[in-house]
Each structure stands twice: as C-alpha cells, then as structure tokens.
Length: 108
Image 1 (cartoon, helix red, strand yellow):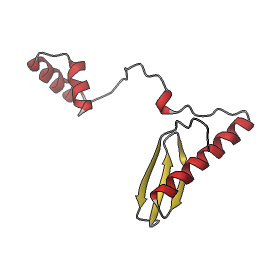
Image 2 (cartoon, helix red, strand yellow):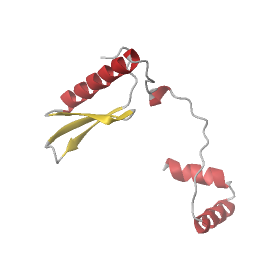
Image 3 (cartoon, one colour):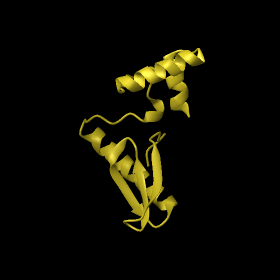
Image 4 (cartoon, one colour):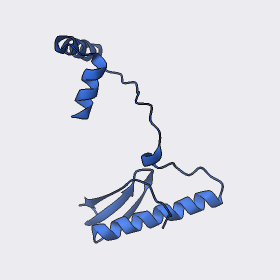
C-alpha cells in the first residue's frame, strides 16, 4: 500500500458483475471486484499503489490526489441565454449577486 495514501476511493455494488467494485477517482481506468466492500476497497488501494510505483519507476507523471489540490474557487460555466436571463432576474429580485445565487444553488 501507499504510504500517506490520499487518493479518493469509492466502493459500489455492480449488479452486472454481482460483486462490489472498488474505484479510484484519480485513476478512472482502474477497478477491483470483490465479494465484500472491504475487500473491494483493499483491492483498489493496492492496484493504485502498484500503478503509482510503476509510473514512478518509468519516470511518468503520477496523478496528484484531489484532496491536496489547490482550487481557485473560479470556474466558467456556459448556459443557455434564456437561463442566464432567468437567473439574473432571480438574483436581482432576491437582492443578491448572480454569483451568490449560483453558488447557493450549486451548494444544494
């Protein structure tokens, strides 16, 4: 296993495979099937660790864990003009900025 593993893992049921599947967000092509959620998590963590070791050995870029990435707090979103107008009107009627309205809606 990786020392100080900070990758983002998820375990979910796969009806198709009739098993639990372990996933790693930073390595979307990896998965691990197992009969229990605990084993699926253990398996995907080991696979991710093996891939990190291999990438480092080959001098390739290792994905940075999402948990330690820095975010600016800004992103651009394209929406239809009619929706933009509707949201601008809603924000104006509420007496808040469009940014604050959008942020509140995204937080729901």
